[in-house]
Image (spheres, rainbow, N blue to C red):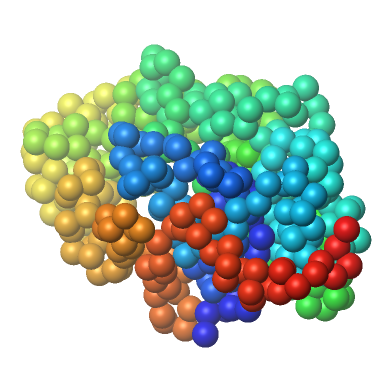
Length: 388
């Protein structure tokens, strides 16, 4: 039995952050029901990466919405809204990521839903919170990375602002959303009362940077300073970064520069006395070390560094990484088969419970695929109870 079995989640979410939270809850056993517009469904169905689709839905949608059910409802229809409210009466969790004010207009804001079901955990994802000058801005990942200062941490000193190559704000916010929902459920188990759980992409991307923002706030307001070449962290001393070798690249993490110099036989590094100098002269140190490391292959350097317990790594591309024994040992892949018969290889939930890996091969639903099942299971066609 998975930990969240018999938990009912109503997901009024689209795109990435909210649905990724629903994905994790579903992986852990919850029954997650997507409430979607009839016909087109949620807007995230049309997100495409490299124009990869299965049927009418992007591969991204299939990846984020596996193991869920779909209930199609027009929230502007009084009859459909009554059915939704009857579902709410019986649900444990309800989530949405509409812009501020939308759910109030529909009549499914927190206070209204709480009156229907006082035990419900009501979760909201916004882009920037409910107040402030950015509250109505589109909550899109690249925009959040750009506004939050994150893009000045990657790349090298003279590079333009460099964003992450993935939707990091969405993914982190989804993870924070799950944490808040589970905490509220634990509290409900003690108090019998539901809760309002709120997260935003902006707060998540700020929390993601807590280490470096804390440094900035306590360092006289000095801006992050990326290394001239091979930057791995704007606030860490040499040798932290990426170096070209004779044939590939090599990553070096935090290390005592004297120990590294002795181990490698790069005695120029010993000229820099005291750890303070390792940041002050970071670019000079990394330049000299970079020239030295070009003399041998990555494999040769790893054969020297790893036995000496120097923190280092080869730098792999996806082809190399996904075929490596280290990756295969984790059994991170699973396969789903879509309604159109397409086989999609994707990753599994990264959590293990009692040693068991959590696989969820059930594919993402078609729009409204489970209407009949849901109406039967929740008795939606036999009157509307106290919903109004």
